[in-house]
Length: 337
Image 1: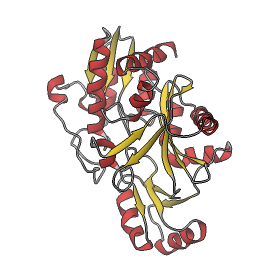
Image 2: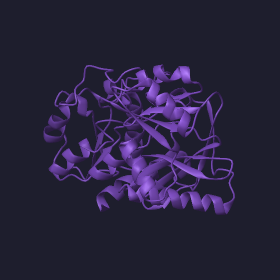
Image 3: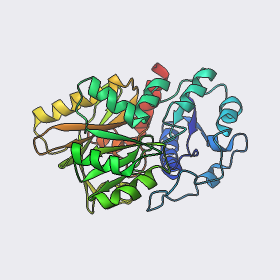
Image 4: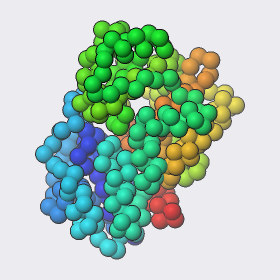
């Protein structure tokens, strides 16, 4: 089968997307797929694959949303004129905005092309952390309490609201970024203004949520089934951009050392959260597990990373699904959908 593989793009997660794309291309070719690697940010002026994959993931998260001169306007040109008519499916390995938020999915729907992962609505709802938290709350899924902050905020009002609701430490993050881009865990009130300033470089809307002490865990979903829970143990600080993408900086325990009843309960919550957002195909649900074994759902990832340090491949491997077979399954789910 012929597959159009979309990677790169214009989001702050561009380098991570290229790393995912390179791995997926190799995996699908090993399964005898014919793969067209396409970066939608270039439109009809596609670079060679060798040039496209000349990149490196930086050790520090990007500081602003404008990281390159490429344009999202080229996405329309790409979908209309670059993706061949005879592809069996489009494998979307675009992380973050303009890839994970429903926009590219809408363009592909207009072309009538099947694609991997969630559709327009599921992608958009999951990408917006504020909307997804409201849905979780409405559906009885535990999520950390939060405060919504808009661009023209009153710092004193926000400080008072944090003191009233949950105190410190607190988590500050843009509503529409992944890979901890623009996110900070603040320990004291005097760190708040700087954290908001950074987060607002990526989004006009910010959430500040209660930090849940305990374990960082994640549940990957493949098809309609949960994969084994992974416990994430960064060696220094919290699970930030550097810990995610620097080999050796984080320990991953899979399956997580939790009793069977608790594990099953968390997996059930993950599947429920995945479904209430309308997600499909594959994804990942992130949680904090407190000392009372209460699992707080943080967010959904509809196009989780497929890099060498990413979590979904680790969870799949724990049940005997190697990376090549994982990518093959993701494609087949797209075609069936």
